[in-house]
Length: 160
Image (cartoon, rainbow, N blue to C red; front, side, top):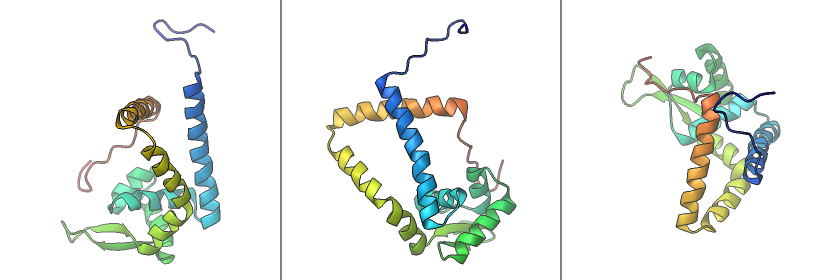
């Protein structure tokens, strides 16, 4: 097979092999944690997103790439387990925002804390200049991945 003009030859270096292994392991962890916690992958993704910040239902639907009706069902299931609460948006009380409860936070952390602890120890083992190189590499890897499947844009709740 001939490469397109200007395309670089593909060579899977040891670094790229390890990155591929990391990406595969991340998917595997999500499957295993979801099964252990009796959560679907989309429910786990919802808890992970809400652990970062409270968001509105429409923004959650966009983040998950599902319809607003599907997002409502996901939130209903998580709310029924006590992991998510709906509350008035402090900036616009006509809107609702979703917030992770302490139960939801405990659920996510309980399963992922060993990984978080080891990653924090690993991070602390690098000198600042080494971390800058690692960060540059990871940002470049992220940009390469997103060139194939761009991250969903997150417009405000009120606009496109």
